View (cartoon, rainbow, N blue to C red):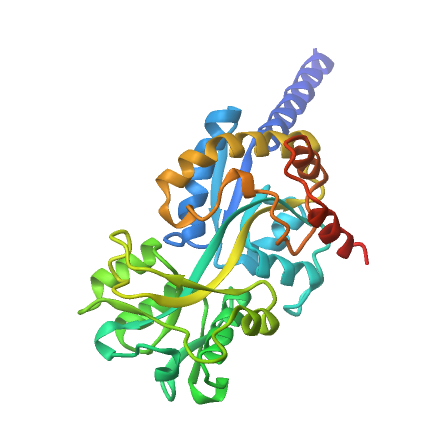
Length: 332
């Protein structure tokens, strides 16, 4: 009797472990920046689309910043992440003082991100050169890439970094909170995201994107200063009430990242579902309309594509010689 009960108990325990393992294996997690950020907002849409298409639990996991969760994506603790090409490349190479995360891979280029320096509109800080002597966020402790973008904007606008009173904050939210509270004069934010809209509604007179102008405000200058970045002109539109005249900001690309350890089957399933859902996602989330499924394989990646992604794009006729040339650079 004792042996029988013991065997049943062991069998039950093994079944529970196997069930737990199966549940963990079937769940897909999407790493994003904090709640209120563009990555988090779009991540929620992607999660809903994947869950419906794949019949698997898909959850969004917000973190303080990309440099926090990219290593978790690389080692497979987080299934996929939404990350900029510049952040992903920096973590892949180990540029931020940590070990290189050589297992990072990308699945798809999602959209081009637009990031601007913002100020309180009533302060009349219209161009980057107007920030001279002002208290400006020049670094984010949890978003190293965006901090470097801030520094790029300042220099492209004709100022040296020591001509502003540089401030470090943890992330986008704290930067916008400080701007709203009046404890600093400018911080950066992705154009049109909820945090931007909240600040525009909360600050008397609203916010203003501080335009990058002058002889250094060129694609060539910013790309040389920080590879992967370019200048984008934002035009007034009813969807962006804070934009009342054309303004120059920084652009770079956003990718869906994953680990080299992600199975080909899972990678292909995720890509198929995402490709089918992307037209509706573009309709639902205006800031990502610069992207399309036909641009998923754009060779602006700063880490290699996952092998299953390469096969997926070759099958669809989207893989080009430029992709092969880019992939060859990672083998050096």
